[in-house]
Length: 394
Image (cartoon, rainbow, N blue to C red; front, side):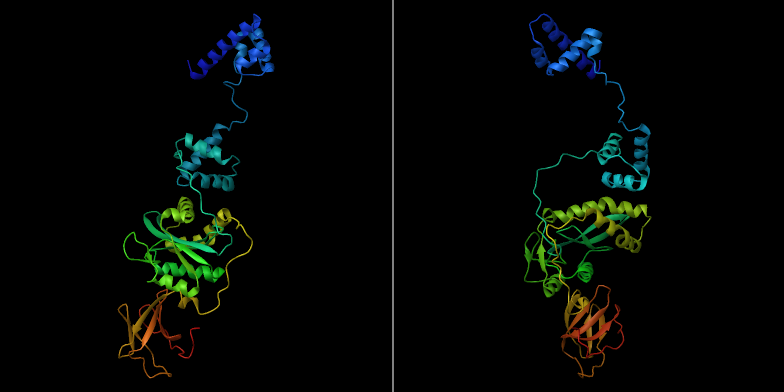
């Protein structure tokens, strides 16, 4: 006998015993209903059914009857087949959104998840850990931004770094792009995109990567007296760099990367994208606008903390800057290159003068003497035309 059948027999025997006592007058209607855990009216209804049909009248007539609200089997089968053949690497939430937007599906997310779990297509989530309170968001956009990179198989059989800069107040992603390796230049590229697009912001929250901070020893605190190129550039712009000590401290950006890793590779596969150039175009033109529309939240206060940038060319701040001494041949040695300083009508030569070499994210170089740009060069050290030495970099 099944568990449901055994339970039905127990309930029948219990009703018959209480009903017998009621018939003998030892129990009132109210007392009999209370023993059976039902209302007086329900007891009278069961009594009438028992007297008219016997024990059969006590059985739940819904047992064995298909609910009128039950989803047709073929609809559930179609959902399972779509997931198994076309959306096999999508998470359930992402898959449900595709069902609604592209397949005219009307069922809810919970039903979709339950069907996939029952079919063994997705695993049931493990029990969550201890409750932790999230850090409150900043009140305005532009107060604090997060910047981080995630190395992942964004396309099959190859790993890229995805560099993302997002707002703490709204979770809006202002800059995102793929590179071969995260580093100083990728940070400069992201900062350039954000400031050109939105303006200067208050602070940048980042991990303790070597391109953000110097550390004296593994596990030790950051060395704020020896700034990296990124720290130096942010100081020049008046932006505070805040070090995060653990992944938990970067919870907002870590959760964002979890979302991206659960959606972006699947979208790139569905769009048949395998190259970095095509992936970056898709990221900017298609994915990011849709992602921000879906996941951006409203700030707690109206307004913005961004301010317009006015001043020197940003490229001459967001770049690697190294001090060099000019040789006797008016050349500057930099990374196995010899950068020839062209003739200057304001000065006979720059021998033994201290100059500053700027290396930009596109590989180009420049030599500065104080605020004046003496020359600009291709990545291989070739001079890019004559430079107007009277022109200030300001």
